[in-house]
Image (cartoon, rainbow, N blue to C red):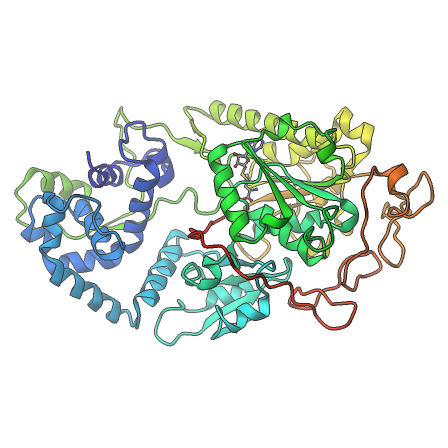
Length: 608
Ligand SMILES: C[S@@+](CC[C@H](N)C(=O)[O-])C[C@H]1O[C@@H](n2cnc3c(N)ncnc32)[C@H](O)[C@@H]1O
């Protein structure tokens, strides 16, 4: 069966319980075509289906070509009109010919459909279609904005406001962005909002076209959900933290975010010697490690990052010389992915009306299946229906026959997540760790943190949750915290955790984070804060000396550093302006380094 027949069969099949498009595609055992290709074709065709239905009906394609069912016609016309490569069948193939002989009517129909929607360019049309699909997928609830992280290794927020986002109005809140009419429609205003929690993060409307921009293609802009920006920002790497580990790194959104933060703080090892802190990024899966490598290179983070391709973090020897300066670790392990927004959506499919005088078998079947507009068809008693599946965020698929299957899978994931956290505890110089998942299950979040804190390893080293009031500013202010019940009443642990969603009036909970810190070798005040001098340098308990002077005797051979070129507050944190830019000690807001982009790889982009 061809890609088109397989995708048509999948879209026409009755829904399984809650069957999402992803479950249908990746849960199907019989696909011959690559599942990723089937998924992309189905998803994109659904998005374009309101437009393509109109074009196909106006061109009377189904009347002229009786072997095409409505759903097959939609898929073929999608590839013919919308994709650059066209229909993925040999030129002589009957299905391809059945569409291509109507080229003139189909292409002019698409132009008419665009003009009817007042889109002056194909790009504007695409943005409108994306925006409408996002709105439809949200079921009419406010959709989520598109989050864009400005990669300060390559550009600045100011530069992006003047280039990629020129013509956008800067509005104060995400709600204002979401209230904007679709960016492509007529002369509607384009709006963006500079995030108040995460520096260098911008919210634009869901349909805003970013991926075609030069900045995106060169890695200067990275599409990364807000919740996914929490871990690196919360980890807050400082000079005294030494090297940083990203234990589960691919595709690399958080690795590149860490690199950007570290470079802003003057921790770039190419600027001042090889003893400057660097990132060790581990990725067990060799294929995903290649993606990580590409992303790290494109984002300009390669100079600060060592990638350990195919390396299982659990098998890394924490006592090896290479890791003796690791002071901070970011753990973002594989999880059930239950909190990823939109994962369970079955997109709406608008099918062209079949010809009323349909006589062939396929159209008779199609008439019953292919209603004009369908969302989540009724569950059927079909014995052969696939089981619902849980697709982990790294693609592992588990068939769920019962609640017990789900529980077993979550327990297995939690055991692995806990093992990672306990392993991270054992790095000799480690003083802080962030743990995050994109799951909504307490079993993978609060419970893992509680079990880790209760462990012997934690008690021996004095690991504890980083209290909310001691977290970096934007995270301290984030309103949605861990669940007190899931923390067995432990308010401090609950407050030390953050939930990614819900803080801006959104309904979904996307990602959970928490930071633990080691009691560590430093002198603390009555509230447990590390006491620092005016330069932000802590004092070593055992010797009473400054951490930087006392390196050799107390914290290994960490070379130390000054606290960089930026102005800091009394707690040693860099002071930023409203745009998130640090202020230079020499005076004025500092622009981050702008790198020449010498990367000539094709940047395929990474969606978080
Ligand atoms: C949730 S994803 C990480 C996403 C990444 N932090 C980002 O923001 O782009 C989890 C990754 O961990 C990898 N992984 C799972 N177990 C691992 C292990 N034991 N050691 C290293 N990597 C592992 C998976 O292959 C997957 O790529």
